[in-house]
Amino acid sequence: MSQFPTPWSDDFIGVAYRYFDLRMNVVPLYRERKTAVNLWHDTINLWNDHSIKIRFVETGDNYWFIMGADSRNPQTNISFFKVLPKSENYERFKKGHEGEAYLRLGIYSEKTLKDSKKDALCNCGHAAEDHDKNDNDACLYEICKCKKFDSFQVRLLKKKKTVTNIAFLDEKNVKDDALAWNCLNANKYSKQE
Ligand SMILES: [Zn+2]
Ligand SMILES: [Zn+2]
Image (cartoon, rainbow, N blue to C red; front, top):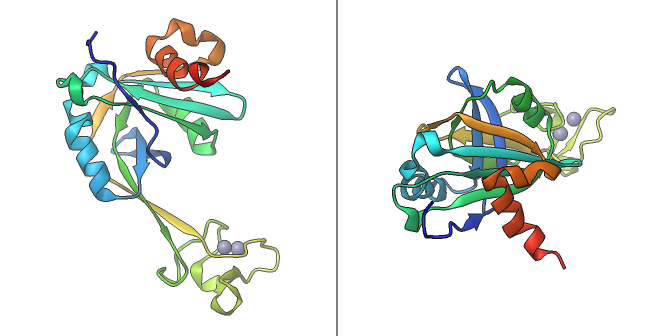
């Protein structure tokens, strides 16, 4: 154990789960490429691969994403957490990870109708060309409730680390897991009155 308490950061948008390079990838998302590149260089790159732990603690419809590791430079180390709604991709990862994943950082960007190619898909499932510029970019399909074209893109940075210590926990069992317990203690229990 290091003598430096590792600070917690939830300063990212969310986590994507992608099948890529023959393995599931866990991808914390950032808006700015520069932020992600610097974070990789200053923190994650210094992690010892075998010490990286990812924990998922489910609480109702949400889950806590928790990630930390031993660093070759404990002074600059950071641990990560984020409370996120359970999603299809999360459930797919939970079922399919087989105890291993690649950790990569990703850049998340949203695209408006104006910046999108005709065949780009909106989150409603219909293409950009099926949305009406003259009606606030609403979807033209009558059965569709989409009022505004909205599309997002995730680009993965190439650098990756292999994670082999992954666990899904119930909140009632977090005391048995040092990383999950430290996280909930610091970011939930100590903040409740
Ligand atoms: Zn749409
Ligand atoms: Zn639509």
